[in-house]
Length: 387
Image (cartoon, rainbow, N blue to C red; front, side, top):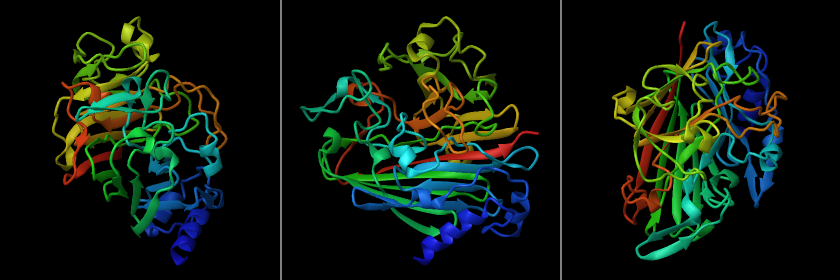
């Protein structure tokens, strides 16, 4: 109870000039005029389990609010080029808003299988498994009730770390094996969000975990993200059919709108007459990372900079791919924190991952997890300022 009271107190005072993160954070937060979060709206019961809002912070004043309903990022405050704290994560104001949202994945922890599986079927050890079709003819992000719709068990061992655990029963959403999952989100001293995923199974199964944060580095409510500058460290991408399932081929980005090897604005070629852009109504594709060495001993996957804020986000990962989604299906159907609508292309996603439909694509890196093995992958989303 003391732990919960501490969280609620920190959340309540953050909208003013007081901070629970120390004197430096207090000084920084004097420049903060972001919308406050009502923690009471995140306290409810779903499927007999209690939901809460948890607050992570570091000594630089950076702050991440997460609800254990779906393991969702609700708000992420980072400093811009003027030292003002900006919410760069598209979140909602309550658990009820997430439950009733027309877009179920805002900020969520995704599983068992992030991205799409063709026709909701895959064969493993000679047996065919059938999944719920929730994305046209395909299965997306785990099925009808993926990990974004469960209440995770949460433990906060310190101010900067949240540990989320969930046990997915054998055959939940059609996937074999009881899967025990642990996800640790933490804020580092150098202003990164560290995402660490672990899973174990008692039967052969497939796993592909990620986080589906929707970012606008100019700040939520600042307009579209088309003038953000993007660099993807990928020489190839996986072309898709009209239902966004990979064809199985790897295609060069050279001389295509998919070439982000040099910093390029997201909107520079998004309306080009290219078949792949038509299939995704913009960018909604997996990029094959080329192994560029980056921070933390990981692959440098992406660099994005907000044109107005100067906020830069660098993504580092152990995963072989990253899904770049340019917000093409946002339709102003949801009211976000602060009263803003999720208008077309007002946010983007960069999801570190294994490739879509890997269980049906033998040439892709395998997503099979066997008993006795541990699925373990780490990604960092590091924030800095470009003057």
